[in-house]
Image 1 (cartoon, rainbow, N blue to C red):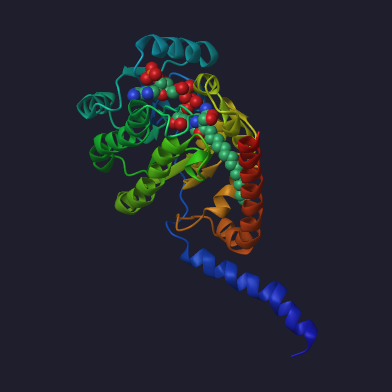
Image 2: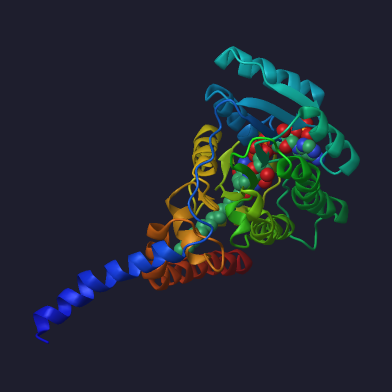
Length: 321
Ligand SMILES: NC(=O)C1=CN([C@@H]2O[C@H](COP(=O)(O)OP(=O)(O)OC[C@H]3O[C@@H](n4cnc5c(N)ncnc54)[C@H](OP(=O)(O)O)[C@@H]3O)[C@@H](O)[C@H]2O)C=CC1
Ligand SMILES: CCCCCCCCCCCCCCCC(=O)[C@@H](N)CO
């Protein structure tokens, strides 16, 4: 073979064969989840990202239920959604940590087509100084609360009468992909969601139920404003590696990702790099994204090491002064 033939083979033919191979093997297969006229159930829907999601889903013609604890905040959220869209959402006041209450709420709300487990609490503090009640609170609300929701909603979702595909989405965080100084307990709760999501997808694929994991960077919400008040400077320095977003932008990415049946939903460019760096054994339905992952993962690892270098340099400097 001549050199020209060889390079033609390497540059065009091999990648095309590889793309065809990936297209044949990616699992689960690509899917679309319609939300118009369907029931979208959003926890933590009275504030921040959840509220933005509820408003957008309602504007797209979904029947929306929002769940949170504080009834006052729920009423306010309902009014603000009515003001901006003219649509009424259902509100449910329940603590996700109470399985029995969650089960009743889910049964009363009627069949769910899209369950978005978005409720979450976060307090940034070094783990040695953090109150064990606060640590347990994050694990309980973020992880066990999500497990409660899944266990309460799954029987109804499996036995639904229409056979259209349905979705379960978890709100993780970029701190659920990489550990961040000050977020030890929070990261633990969000990393837990990944294991839950990966295993759950295998358990429910036969029922045409599709799992999504959303990984937002810092997002302007009441929750973040509160967390900022006590946040260590090092946490701010490290989280600034990924630019802050508006709740509406994150909600839009999340909703589009859910509708396209995406397993890992990223929100910004750093998020995309992070998802390639941590792609591991997460399912990938898009053969094009699988291709990008395989081709770029080595270079992205170098970028990741550079980020680690800059973070550890900040930590050293902090301890030196
Ligand atoms: N903002 C950010 O920077 C980022 C946030 N995230 C994640 O996004 C999600 C939403 O965050 P954000 O919008 O900032 O949060 P907010 O604090 O603004 O809102 C949190 C929502 O969760 C509800 N909630 C909290 N605890 C419970 C509970 N035990 N049972 C039921 N509902 C509960 C709250 O209502 P109530 O208190 O009345 O119950 C509220 O509706 C969280 O999972 C968070 O971890 C991820 C990455 C970045
Ligand atoms: C190739 C590799 C690229 C690596 C880039 C890594 C950038 C990581 C930034 C992480 C930011 C995490 C914010 C989480 C905030 C959060 O969850 C809120 N609840 C609270 O602030």
